[in-house]
Amino acid sequence: MDAIKMPTEAESALLESFSRLKAVARAAPYPSAETRRAWLAALERLMQENRQALVDAVSRDFGHRSDVETRLAELFPSLEGARHARRHLRNWMKPRRRSVSIWFQPASASVIPQPLGVVGVVVPWNYPLFLSFGPVAAALAAGNRVMVKMSEYTPATGELLQTLARQYFGDDLLTVVNGDADLAQAFTRLPFDHLLFTGSTAVGRHVMRAAAENLTPVTLELGGKSPALVARGANLKRAAEAIVAGKMLNAGQTCVAPDYLLVNAKDCEALLDEIRAAAKRMYPTLAGNPDCSAIVNQRHYNRLQGWLDAARQAGARIESLNPDGEAAADSRKLPLTLVQDCPDDCELMREEIFGPILPVVSYDKFDEALAYINARPRPLALYLFDDDALRIERVLKETVSGGVSVNDTLLHVVQENLPFGGVGPSGMGHYHGREGFLTFSKLKPVFRQSRLAGTWMTRPPYGRLVEWMLKLMLRR
Image 1: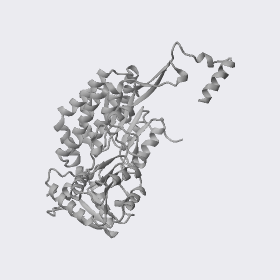
Image 2: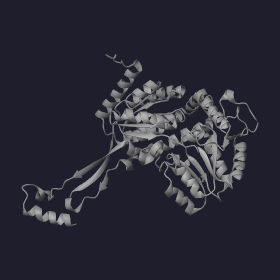
Image 3: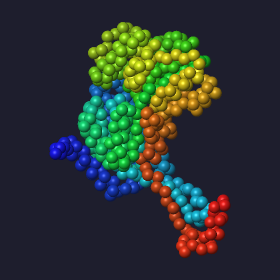
Image 4: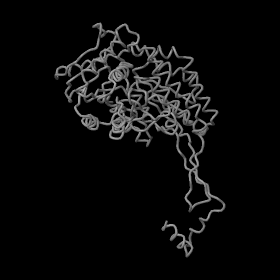
């Protein structure tokens, strides 16, 4: 007989925290708007009053993370999300009237958003603040209690958030847990009322399997290879600057970073010249540059170097945009690296890169570019650089992706009135803004019968009256 695996101390504590939050949610299943607004205000205070500590913790976890990037790409959108939810909460919570068929009037119908209960959030290492605070704000706005599992790759940030969550929220509203992959698996096996996971497609499959055991609904924010498509006639300087900025933010460790470049063969060299110039302007130095973030750990640094070596051996042309020729291996910093003529079977062309490496693919006709995108798994983001309205419309209608930015990169993600989410291999479900509130709510349909209802005419024993009514009903 197989030995029964006993839960570890950490797993027991995890279950205890979950049970406590579940009991609190049952005792107060529908927090008022005032209560939820107070929760969101506390989340804002947590971020505002601990800004530098949060920035420093993330930088320690990365070896070096640009403090400007952390404030710009993590704290700012997190605060905007919490403020947006607080401003719009009363409107989101209102019951919505729905029409009733003529056959059932004068009854009335409505939809009431109801809190689900306890929401689980699994946070990746690349944006540990934004990808925890964002889902937390949406879940709190919807009236839920929340458990957050931080990545083991960001221990300093995880420890700080665990302390701050207890300080600002106690133990009955928001719980942050830290631990290894085994604890993460135990976390996803808990019977949450909804589970949001952000991470790789491969791990997302495991998360979905674990959640299925409890029929837990999931939102999966995954990744994939997001193309940057530059059409003929596009402003190449503008495109180059946006692509470099989007690719180099957080050293390319962004799920919506432009993963590869699609450019018309006639514009290819001119665009690459603009990219070289933009990279030199933005990142004139590397190792000691406070604006240049590091690769999160040695394992991921070695992975990127290995993929570059494999592409080089396969015949790819590799160009490192390192103006001063610095040796930055000790700081785990990589310059923007262009890769041309890379075979399709190389990892750089098959896997999400998650680093400052940009494969370049040229096309002759625009239809070929669209076919190239559509022949691959649906990406989390698509970036189109074009001023031709008809071509833009074609791309929007003929490709499927999680989101699109036209003539820029990344910015569709931080629009609170736009849903954020993937499609197919890049994920399922949405959050941000009202979509986040709806994701973590049950839209409860309510039918209210009138005292003047005529439904008695359709009840047994059936006779001539119901036959006459059915003739009318089925004829319409």
